[in-house]
Length: 98
Image (cartoon, rainbow, N blue to C red; front, side, top):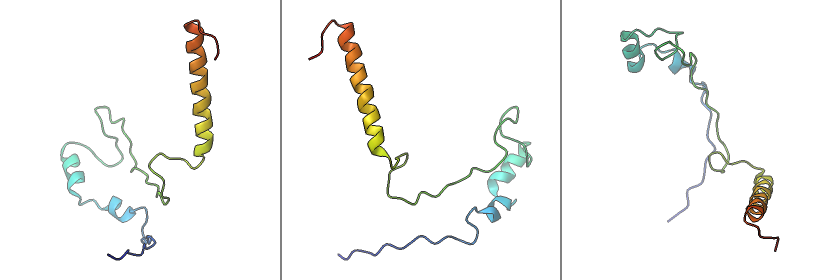
């Protein structure tokens, strides 16, 4: 088995996919229009939903979803919270510090 070399992802000419969003022949858009929706209105009973397309951001690192680079700072904050919780539990149950 040979390892396959990784390739950089190439950006298309239209990274926001605006050609697709402006295409009015899509099945879903036609179906919504048959039910009374029109361009510029939001979805929902009072048309309160978003009127713009969802914006997408490229995740180009090897971290998991929701991960941050400053994980060491998060660890310290969580450790402080945990120590505070243990101190409060000891106070409630009448035990002194060990």
